[in-house]
Image (tube, rainbow, N blue to C red; front, side, top):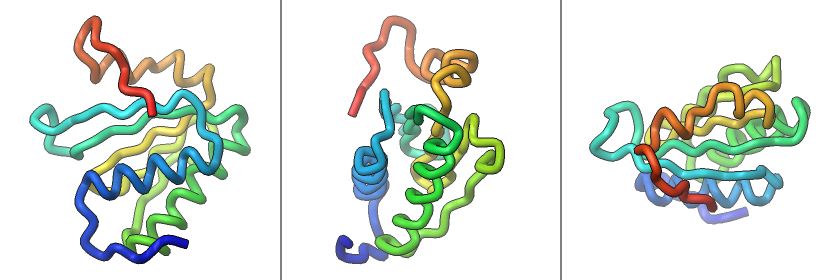
Length: 121
């Protein structure tokens, strides 16, 4: 367990989220910098899990780690279905998809400029 960081910056929060996603074997992780583009968050992270069970587990473990390590309560939406879970961690919004659902919604195309390379972690 890492040291508790009570006033984590959005960059610290992002690093913690990316580490959690890596630990839980999230696939095709993409980070989108929203600073100056949206007031809802500083970053958006999009990733995939191989099954509904893995999508739910990734999001639940992320929520638990953010609470334990950073003292940050996060909201989960969609965990019961397990196709697409949104984790609202404040300065960072995380979308965890099953691959088919991710392909259908294509959030990356909505938020990244045309022709931009995706920042994969």
